[in-house]
Image 1 (cartoon, each protein chain N blue to C red):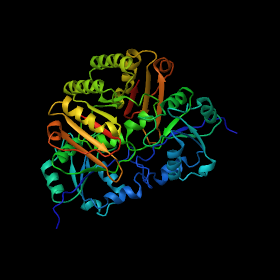
Image 2: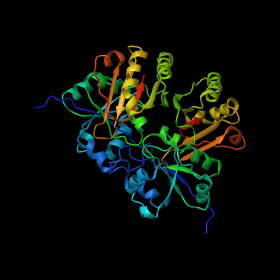
Image 3: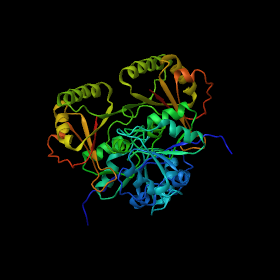
Image 4: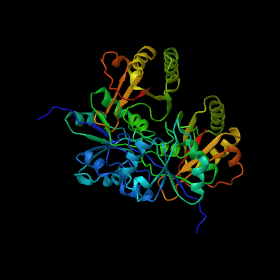
Length: 234
Length: 234
C-alpha cells in the first residue's frame, strides 16, 4: 500500500484529427497506464485517446467532461489523484489550458500538492503555461527581463499593475545566476494573491513545474537548480 | 526540370538533448530528403539532426549558421530555395522563431513567395508564430476579439498603436464566419507597414500560413476557407 498522490499529466492532442501518427512510443509509454481522463468533450476525446494506445480499452476508461456546458466535479478528480491514481488532462485539440479548458484543474492540483507533468515536448514556453494553471486565454511572452537590478524591480512592479488590470499571464526566462534574485524581487513586487509558477528542466530528469501564490511562496524555502528557468506570473 | 521553389520547413528540436525519441515516423518522413539546414549553432544542431534520421549523412549535410555571432547569408539560402531545394530551419532547442533566431529568414521567404511549412504539431498558436516571421521575442495571445463590430474595430486600432510602441506580435483566433470581416477591419485599422499573418488548417491538407504587409495584402484578393483562422499582427 502506498499513500503517494497520483500525478496529473497534461497531454497534447493533434490539431488535425486525421493525424494517425502523433505520439512517439516513449510518450505513449509514459501514460499508457492511465485510466482516468479529464476531457473537453467526449467524442473528440475518444478519437485522441485511441491514438494513445492505452492499456485500458476505450470503453473501460473513465472520462470526466470539462467544458462550457459541463462543470467538472473537481473534488471527485482530486480524490482520484489523492487515492494514488494518475489522471490525464486533454482538450479537444492542442494543449489543455492554452486557449482551452484545463487551467483551473491544474491550479487546484498545485494547491493540493499534486504533481503536474506533461508529455508535451515542442516548446518550453507553452509546456510550462499548460502546466502552470495560470491564465492561458490571454498571455504574454516577454523574453528576458532587464539585467539592471533597479530596472528589473521596476519592471516587475509594473507587471503587478498590469495583471490586476488585465488578468494576463506574463511569461519570461531568467538565466541561472539571476533566478534567486529575480524570485526575491517577485516576492517584493507582486501582491500576495498573485500566482508565480517556476518551471525548469522541462522533459528532463529533474523537471519541476511549481505554482503557488506569493503568500504561499513566502513560506517556502526554495532552492534553484543551476538551470535556465521559466517564470510565469499571473 | 522544374522551376518550382523549394519550401522552408520550420522544425522543432527537443528541449532535452538526451531525448532519443522526439519525432514520429511521419514527421521524419516529411523532411528526410532535406540537405540544407539553417541552424543556430552547429554542435547542438548535429545532435538534433541525428534524431531526424535523414537520407543524407551528417557529414554531407550543408549547415548554415544563424546566431548572435554569425550573420546568415540570406541571399544564399533564398537562392537554394529558388533553385527548388527544400531547406530546414532549426534552433538549438525548441521552436525556431519563438524566443529563438529564425523569424527574419521566415519573413524573407514569405516576401519571396517561398512556402513556409512546419512539422510542429502540438500547438496551433506557436506553430503559426514560428511560421509567421513575426516577432517571437515578445508576443501576446489575446484569444478571441470582441464580437461587436465597433468594439472590434476599436480594439484593432489600439493594437496598431501598441505595435508601434512595443514591436510586440499579437495573436488571436477568429471564427470562420467573421474571418473576412475581421481581415477587412485589419486593412482599415493598421498601418501600411504592419505585418499580418493568416494561418489556418495547421497540419491539415489545406494548411496555409501566409504573411504580408498591409500594403501587400491590399493588392491580394484573399479567399478564406470556412475554417477557424489564427491571425498574427506585428
